[in-house]
Image (cartoon, rainbow, N blue to C red; front, side, top):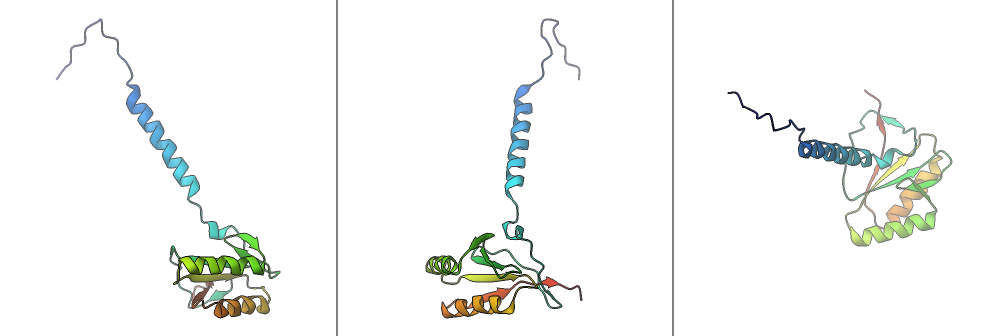
Length: 137
């Protein structure tokens, strides 16, 4: 079917669909740039384990990281022991079934991990996991 255009009508580019596409691209890039994995900002060489399972993202998961020097991080922010335990107490009040994951470098001093585990036990946190990487076996 042919459409007969009058010579008086100029051909125009429709701007509304073009603007819609630009806004959709803008929203896509804004959302994609904010979806980064905050738990992987701290570089840790995790120990390997044959029975390592894939971690699942959970909303009530608190990640405590310990680096090679034994420094403690909560959500990739360095904290002192006192600050860590205050934060854990606050989170336990809001979420009684709080899950804690400890990410410790494989060269972390043993006593640093044990001290965190014992403090968690004293505070009644029962669901504690140690993060490892799968050795592929």
